[in-house]
Length: 128
Image: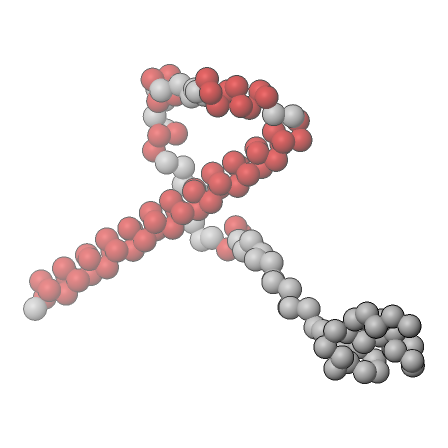
């Protein structure tokens, strides 16, 4: 009979090289799975005031003065994409623009809040 490591022992139980496992194998727990980060859901119904567009949209001649353009390199990359890849990229770009607009709205509101607070402090100081 061969004496190789890992060979069957007389009881039909395999032994490893260490020989410490006799009987049923010890279950090794896999590491816990990492939780996926979920994108926060923002309820747009909760906002008190209407969505304000930047002043550039009220400037009638802005788009005529500064027409949108795509760089030749970017255009080439877009046209070389397949339909599925183009759709995925469009979704990612749209999400990025929306996050950018959300950030701008928060910062604009923060600036307004700071301006109001500064006005209140000035009034308080004038009374002193």
